[in-house]
Image 1 (cartoon, protein in one colour):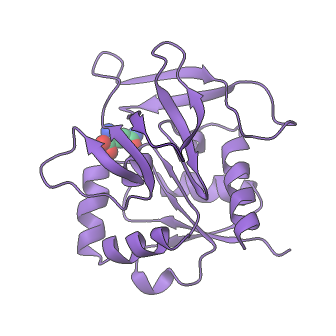
Image 2 (image 1 turned 90 degrees about the vertical axis):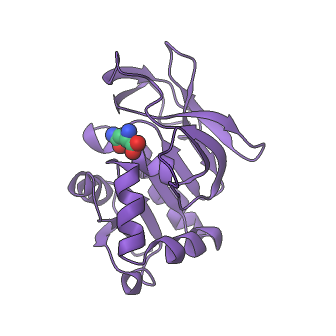
Length: 201
Ligand code: GLN
């Protein structure tokens, strides 16, 4: 099977890190910022960054509605941190009028871990990575959200140990992490997403 083509939404955020991580996970990674670039994709990554900026730029670049439709119609997507926020059907602590692409039946709280722990690292034990991929994953949290409420079709893949909060979820072909797997060398999350994309094509 040829390598799947996975777009990284390149409006703002840590785009190069995701492009590199996807290539290391044996996908063909392409930055996308215009609606006409979306039809070529087998999957989409929404990077970490700032969700209010991603929202505003998506509107300015006419990407909000096309991406909503594509995700709703089954395009596999993976969002990290701000990307997790963009995949949430509901937001807590969003700014006035803040919109998301949606897709995952969950409420995500922005900046949930609070000021005192703006950024931290934590070992996360994840499920759903396949039997061969055992062992905790070092997770980097930067002004990270958490999942405050999730619907019954949302599978919890991991929680943060200190708080017990949900920080990794999957709903069908949609995957989201509150942390940034693109910033660490462990490729298991990107490999999982590439597998999800392959299964879908
Ligand atoms: N706090 C940011 C937001 O609301 C997310 C931070 C991140 O992606 N590292 O979008």
